[in-house]
Length: 374
Length: 106
Image (cartoon, rainbow over all chains, first blue to last red; front, top):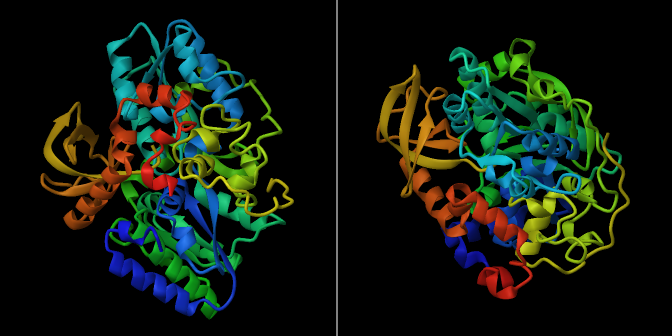
C-alpha cells in the first residue's frame, strides 16, 4: 500500500480497503465511467490497492477522447476560414484531426481563441459584430447545459454572428452500448458524479434492472472512488443490482431541474458517432429546430465532411474497456503524448495519457479480441 | 474541462438580465453564471463547470476538494494558460523523466 499515505484520510482509506478485501469472494470487473475518475485511480494506485479479484475497467467518459475525427476536421475547416473567430476549451487544441490540430491552425494564421466558458465566446461575438464567432460545443451532460444557456442567451440578445459546432454525448446510451457488446465484461458501474449532479439518477434504474448491473454514483476524490468500489462490490456479492448514490454531497436524485429544462428547450436527441467506437443510437444532442440558425455545421456548410479514423489506433477498445492502454502495441512506442495516434493519449483526462504519465508502461496481459459495440 | 471545481461566491450581480457571480476557486477568481442555481447566496459554495454553477456544495467538502485538486495540479489544468499547456503537450516533456512528477515514477 505504497500510495496510501497520500490519501486525505489514510485511516479511513485503510478501513474502506479492509472492508473491500473482507467481502470479496470472487472476481468482479467494475467500470469507472469518467476520465477524471480514471486519473484519480491511476494517480493514487487505487487499482493496485484493491484485492486481485476486483478489476477496474476504464470507461468512455472523457469528452475530448470521444469527439469523433470528422467533428475535429469540421472544427479545423471552420477555424481556417477568413473572418472566423473560433473559440474552444483549451484541452481541444492538441486533439489530432486529419493531419493537424487547432494549435497548428492558429500557427497558420487562424484566429483560434481559448475560452474558459462558452459565455466568453458570446462576449467575443458581441465585441466583434463584423466577424463570425464559432464555439466548439463538445462534452457530456455537465458541459451541455452551459452551452445550451449560451445559445439561449445569443437568441435572447439578438446576436446573429454566433454559432455552435455541437457534438454533445450522453452517458446512459454509452452504458447500454457497453452492456450489449458481445465482449462486455463489465459487472458494475461507478457512474460519473458530476453528470449526475445535472441529470440526477432517474435514467439509471432501468439500466440497472435490464442488465442486472449495480450502478453506484461516485465522486472524484480517492476516498470517493474507494467508497464507490466498496458499495458496488457489496451489491455484487449479495446478488443485488440497484442504483446507489455514494456522492450525495454533490448529487441530488432529481439533479438540476433548471439545467434539464434548458437542455430540453435548446437540444434534441440524435445518433452520435463516438471516436474509436462508432455510432451509438440516440447517444447525443444536436440543436433543436428552434435553434438551427445557431448551428455552425449549417452556417459553414461542413455537414458533408466525413473522415475515417486511422486503423492503428485502438482507442475505441480502450474506451469500451476491452483493452488496457498498455496492452496496445503502439502504446509508448509509436503513440506517445508528443506524437499521439488518438485522443486518449493527448487528452489530459484520457486513459492512455494517465497510464503514460504515471508510468504504467509494462505490458501486463495479452490483448483481448474485440469488436466495436455499434 | 471535464472536472467541475468547487468555488465560493463572493459577489452577485445582475448583468444583461442574467444572474452572475464572482467566484473564488482557492485564489483564482472567475465570473460564473448562476442561472442554474438561482438561490445561491454570497458566501456559499457550488460546483462550477465551464463558468456555470451546477450544484450547491457544503463548505467542508468544497475546501477538501479544492485542496486535493490543487495538489494534483488540476487547478493549473483548469485555470492555467491553455496555449502554454498545449505547447508543452507538443514538446518532448514526458519523454524526459525529470519532468514527470516524482511520485508518478515510483
